[in-house]
Image (cartoon, rainbow, N blue to C red; front, side, top):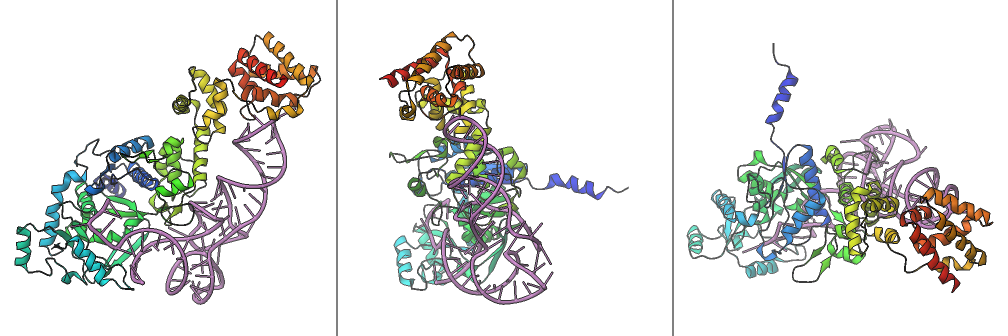
Length: 524
RNA sequence: GCCGCGUUCGUCUAAGGGCUAGGACACCACCCUUUCACGGUGGUGAUACGGGUUCGAAUCCCGUACGCGGUACCA
């Protein structure tokens, strides 16, 4: 008997290449919303496919090195719960994961391309490049490229003789290696999000592959490292789409075409007003965060606020980001990370850019706070209380308070305003809300309330409420007339959970104390 | 300029040739609530434009407009 075909299929499954994705930021500053979303999509895909998620640091531009930026990235990923399987910090089978530490590795590939005639040495100095651009600049072509049209007019190994080239290299003349873009080819590939995309090579410039300082550019490094690290799927921002033909040609020229990852160019996150990519500036201007966490430019006091410090829950932050450009096809908007892993699919990623809406972001956070149980919220709330000098020593009581006020909190710091009066006697009261309707009868009534409360041995919300209302009825006062004053006395303002819940928590002594305090002020 | 990618309520989006184009945020109104919230009900509000193809187009094709991205020895 032959094996059933379906069994054959299954047995072939494990042979399929293991999914490996990477997030490859350059450590130049805070981690932007869009960056975190790229991490997220990478992570979701990797987890769903049982693959690996790699963090690779693209620090090939030494002039843009910013101390602390790399640590900041680790911290962000940790906060978001999107930890890489391999990274400079965690190590892994393909170390090093920092491109600056892989510097020596890239040159051989660039030299190989030169030998193959797919790349060439170029000796042009920066000022020569600039004057070239000046010289060829016209109204129709405001930014001339270093391409096949002008290649032969520059100082490079295409235009110079073999001997001249060799001599200059021997003399140590600084040079770069550029890719030699073909003059008349069409590069076509299938993007997982956009479908078939094609470019004509005559319109793409001879990009620098290896810089004069020996460092690769992004173009070379991304191809070499994705190959060496066995990356199977490459997710990146849409801004990379125009240079994708260079990368695809590189995969081909290096002889790795069969190993090339599948590409997915993610839509951009746009500023809420007007158009354009969302930038740190927009956040400052409009008053919302753009970075995941606070970021201070080293050596300055220039602080950019982050979502974490502004009081977002990581669950909400991730959820919100996931929905910016993706949905599962149903009306569901609230997803846990596990649900996202289960349901994420690249073909449901939207093609167009999405304007960032801070109001919606806050809504996600509010929903997550409402859903979270008090225990989950406790560490965050405690730390915020610490910052505001609120001492919550009794854990059980703190949890009660959190449960009572969380539906009124959109951002974590809202817990301060919403629950300070549980722990501290109000310093100010909204007396204007009581005064207009205040009279002798009410003054007397609250005196009676105090005597009543003093006699109570039971102290819970239900009994207090019943007792208070009975007393009011006995004194011929409508509960509605005295409930608001009572609230102001206990809370200080017109907000907060049920008054008797509050009285139950702050206790007999403090309740009476607060009533007294306000009564005195009302008398004076 | 050139190249590429986009375009459904103000915003995020659903609808992959067939209903009054659905949901969410925000906004407004009402209900609940003797505070504030939560919750509930309802409302305003969109297929950029022009041509095709088709019995029928938000959906497929072409063009235009608009937006964005790229056009660095930055990523």
